[in-house]
Amino acid sequence: MKQLVIISGKGGTGKTSLAACFAALEKDRGPAPVIVDCDVDAANLHLLLGGETVGSDAFSGPELAVIDRSRVADRERCEASCRFGAISGLEVDPFFCVGCGVCRLVCGEEAVRMEKREAGIIYERDTTYGKLFSAELEPGRAGFGGLITALRGRGEEEALRRPDSLLLIDGSPGIGCQVIASLTGCDLALVVTEPGKGAFHDFERIYQLLRFFGMKTRVVINRSDLDPGLLKETERYCSSHDLEIAGRVPFNDLFRQAALAGKPAVELGDAKLNSLISDIYQDVRQAL
Image (tube, rainbow, N blue to C red; front, side, top):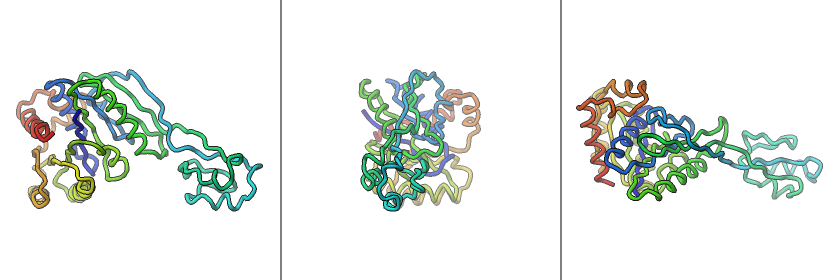
């Protein structure tokens, strides 16, 4: 089983659109991939791949401390034990409690109990392009990394049941724990960037993360014709850091049309765009 993660550092670069195209091309190559959408804050890959939900499971995040006031021997010590400021007046603020359990050690098991709390839901969908796993994190809940690790675990189990299938991961934006959980153990990271000041800054940041983990990397420059000067700056950066560019994709309104139609852009039948995306896909497949 090969694992490919598509990441961006910055949101809005076209990462999900490219992931949908790769799913369609991989399905045509055969066998169909197993797809995981790791953007648990705002999962939207299903809007392009369609299909129907065939299962869902609740995900329990960090536990919540519940304090029995009558059993606390030293109130000040109990409140001071929380380094996250979650305990005030022996009441626990669920938005600050991270479930570390220190208060239980300090105040005693009879005074404090730890309760499970639902942090999100993992969905399983059957699509034309393969099995898709996605998740929704409850607003205000912690546990990005844990939810993504559980989500990827579902995808890996499914992929292992399908000989020679690709595990295609649409990673989270940013460089935090959710991104680390998205790329851990992958064979290749495909970074999607664009010629813009914000995108270039975030591209540098995500590359530093990938270099730290020693990840094999390819780069796609989307909307490559918007700013020739920043395009050259991005290309120079890639060249100086031995980063291979898998392809450059000029601005194309077909991606917007594909989003409105709810399908991958390569399904719209534009020969020029399909050839360009296919060349990028073949380069990445060969790297895998």
